[in-house]
Length: 412
Image 1 (cartoon, rainbow, N blue to C red):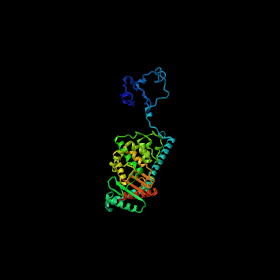
Image 2 (image 1 turned 90 degrees about the vertical axis):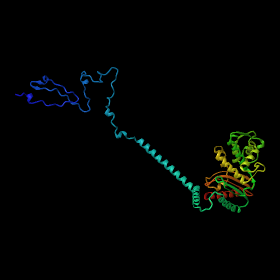
Image 3 (image 1 turned 120 degrees about the vertical axis):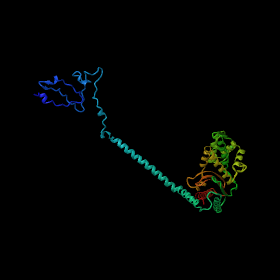
């Protein structure tokens, strides 16, 4: 007969994968003819700490980290240690939400940014409208007409040539024939060298324009290193001369730098400052330099006389010096740009045109000589008058400047 053990074999029980498979001897498994299996350990729940062999070998009642198992001198932690899974868990959307104050700050900053952008855009648009309604539209249309005329060849001789300036001379001469008094003018295109003029060699009282060759000689020596702008000159009784300016009213022995004297002679028409410069440079040196620039053999011979042609030659030489030594000549060009215009040559050119000039006023004689950076070419222009009032001379000078500006714009 078969025993119960042979007839009914025991079922295989599931064992935990964590525990090693134990071997059971036949003596232990057989009691009263039946197989006795070892007690099955419970399967650990997910997330629970699994017991290891080390935990089973510990003394019962001792807990790791407890009072009994804690090393001496260590305090128990206030909170249980968080698991790695909890530490790496991403925050919820509510935790990432910005506070209301931060959102208001961002909204306010965006509004200020839009306001600044709109303000800059409106400023640029307003300046563009102002430029077009002012000199911009005239300059733009003049350049466009000139380009079209040159491309099509409809205006005969090209602009800024001697032939074209001859037509300008005829128009200015016809205008001056209708004006009372005596007028003479000279002009030179500083880019092409073409010149024009009416009565260019007529002599007039130099008045304050006599300072032009003196100051050009001074800045020529400063550009070459012979003199320094900070060098000072003492005022003497022989230097004092009547007229505008404040240097003549200063006590004798007062010292002034060379650049201060040049500014006073040009901008304030100070005759005392001019005498101090002539004494410093030497009258013979100034005469030689003026002759080298294309002026008369004795520019400082009394009574001081000058012609429109000499003034334009001085200005042309100054323009060449400014291109060669722009840093050294910058104070002089700045002083000439600050000379009061009184609505004369500067009034006839479009608003915003760069101009550096010098004026000379004498009883019934008025002169204005300037370097004008027109849209076409830089131009040296000098207009002298005699037997007229200052208001009449200013009107004629501004009208001549307007005719020259129209020629430079259109080439006609």
